[in-house]
Length: 379
Ligand SMILES: *[C@@H]1O[C@H](CO)[C@@H](O)[C@H](O)[C@H]1NC(C)=O
Ligand SMILES: *[C@@H]1O[C@H](CO)[C@@H](O)[C@H](O)[C@H]1NC(C)=O
Ligand SMILES: *[C@@H]1O[C@H](CO)[C@@H](O)[C@H](O)[C@H]1NC(C)=O
Ligand SMILES: *[C@@H]1O[C@H](CO)[C@@H](O)[C@H](O)[C@H]1NC(C)=O
Image (cartoon, rainbow, N blue to C red; front, top):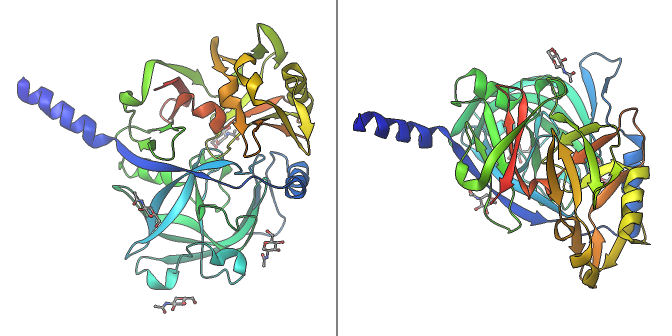
């Protein structure tokens, strides 16, 4: 009996693979850069389409901007392994890294994958491109062995960039998508699916703990480490299998509904640093807060932060408050900016993106086995 219990414990700790993430800062954009970004946002809503030319897919991802803060972790690709720093992103489905196919200076500040130095590399040669809120990349698909900690994904399709813009100076090399295969544009099986299909993970689950501190954040695969949250995990079914999107009941402040009046949709997106909503409704919240415009940003006096109400997101009957300390950022001039972003494009369904501002407060579990998201109070 004792032996069985011990075995169970060993199996449990063996099954979860913890990957440390580092919180890294991206310099705040100047006003004109910010405007360029808004142009990007306007041009590319959350929509995906295929070009008429066969073998060439174009992806558009929702309002990604990677500004302020991102969480990056290390992976290796190839044999012998080459190391990359990537954003683990639940808003997209592909893995891509810069490569020696990219000859422009836009790639040279990053680690570039040298396929010619990997004995396990196999070309696929399909061309694809992805557009993000503030960047775009075009690449070719190949396959190779990818390692995330102790997890090994062999013959993993991945994108090798040939051209990229908007990622210069970013504190990461590439992106590792953890969304469903539906949103893949390399045409290949996403890494989590590949690991799952090969039985490399005990449970088809991964989870994020995002810390306020530079170190201590983690993405875990194959199970949930209970030491990162307190209380129960509240489960929310996905609206549709194929995207990390859930129904939200309402958004309120001081008991008054300010957005999402008759319900709306929320994307749970670890690759997005902020919380994003439709412009009209974000403006309403900013007015409620008495925030003043400066450039394309809104700010409040830092001395007012302690008196501002929380923004309460209600999901599946449970209230997830985001206090003012979490949705404001103090800048070097001593002003507190509101960390909410307006999506200028109005979509037919009211959609909010719950990024890292939300996910630092709430430990998040992504359950591919039951097509649901779990949220719990982060420790
Ligand atoms: C991740 O990669 C960076 C850059 O190569 C390195 O400084 C860091 O030590 C690596 N971290 C881990 C946990 O391997
Ligand atoms: C691989 O290709 C890169 C870029 O073309 C080159 O710099 C590097 O020397 C090549 N490596 C080998 C082993 O040929
Ligand atoms: C490099 O990036 C800049 C801005 O991000 C972009 O305008 C330019 O077209 C890119 N160059 C190439 C060769 O992709
Ligand atoms: C994703 O793909 C599955 C299987 O093809 C399909 O049933 C589902 O409706 C798709 N989901 C979305 C959001 O497109």
